[in-house]
Image (cartoon, rainbow, N blue to C red; front, side, top):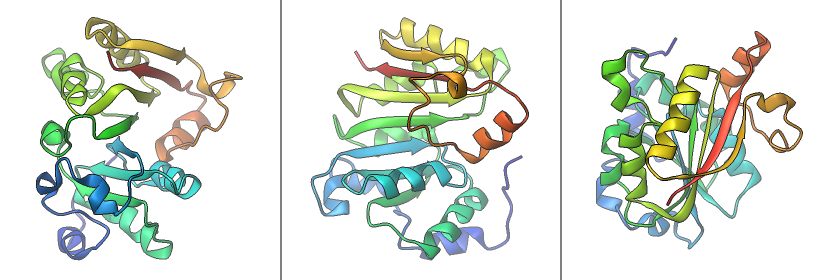
Length: 213
């Protein structure tokens, strides 16, 4: 269950130098924000930030941006970052619906989607992050042949994502229906908080890597 109503979370976020406020003004200029020419990679729906924090720590030559809709969840990530701030990691609090207004053409090198909301009702299909509707948005700013990585424990959402990627013309690079027992795709895998929880229950973790057309 997501934490959505921690008193004062919005005030803490508004004052944090680790959060980019009014991110639309930086569209096309994110390398200047980081003050380097390194590639930019983003996680949409980052939760409490464990995954992207570990990535940024392991790869100082890459810039990372964690995007989270809920203030109380982002607050948890900020609390972790205060203990060990990283120069190559920033956060944005925003709804993914507006993502194409924040990044310019070819500006993002890679996108990570981890344990996204499945939006199980058919009428909400376009809200699912692996949907063709969102892939179209991502294509506006992901570089040519850029990569999208998606992990989930929800088999229905995963199969939906595969069908949508095919429909949108994206190339399937790698796919597994049991990540933790896949000898090749499990190499270097960084687990999210949700991944640790679900896999502990014995749930298989599904993952695909797709390349934009």
